Amino acid sequence: MVSGNKYWKLKYNLREAQVQNDLGVLTFGGAFSNHLAATAAATAAMGLRSVGIVRGEEWAQKENQSPTLQFCKQKGMSLRYLSRSNYRQKETTAFLQHYQKTYPGYRLLPEGGTNPLALQGCAEVLDENDHPFDTICTPVGTGGTLAGLAMGGHTNQQFVGFSVLKNEGLNTQIKKLNPNTNWTLNTDYPLGGYAKTPPELIEFINDFKKKFTIPLDPIYTGKMLFGIFDLINKGLWRWGNNVLVVHTGGLQGIAGVNQRLAQKGATLLD
Ligand SMILES: *Cc1c(COP(=O)(O)O)cnc(C)c1O
Image 1: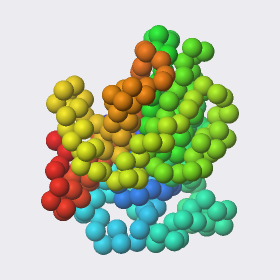
Image 2: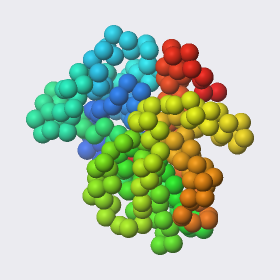
Image 3: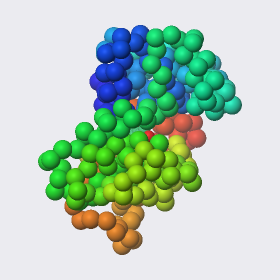
Image 4: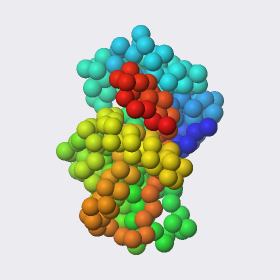
């Protein structure tokens, strides 16, 4: 099954890959990346090949410690491991040319999958049934999902993104993807930084699941809802009253986070 925002972002990219008769897709991500998992599953379902370039050469020796990498391999993705310093070059022309040469016929997609076709997929997620909602919330990594959702927004709607990483330039980056003024970025809830999972977050997610029987992932949706509840409880909520919260998926990441929490002897996600 392929679901979540990474699927929306892949939809038109993979359609284009089919139209162009590409052999497969090559893309980039960390050892717990939702994007790598979604790419592996979606390409396999379509009969396309896939290559995943993974951040951190140490993962070559401990693939079995990442449920995400295990899943990618099961789906037939070829994994290549890069040192963090090499991985950092992943947007340079020389680097991309190298991979395009090494893997002819492969479509290169950036880390997180954000590109113009990805925005087009996200712009389709909401429809006229969602028009009564005046405020739409979504978690933000690269901002492609926020930018795309806002592109497809109705005139009465304001989009509020919750950043899961500390990145000063993020607002500017998203402005380049979508220059409209119908979205804002809240940067107050990375809760220690990307992929950091402090005990108060784990407790919030476990309580939330008990109360509402909705599972949240600890990297994206959990932090967004932690932020939304915190703002409401503190009387700081300043957007509309009819709020739609987008569940972007990410549940495949829970197993990996639990492995790391268990190693620390910390409370696990239910
Ligand atoms: C990647 C991801 C996001 C963030 O998407 P961007 O388009 O990079 O901002 C949000 N939620 C989940 C579950 C994700 O996997």
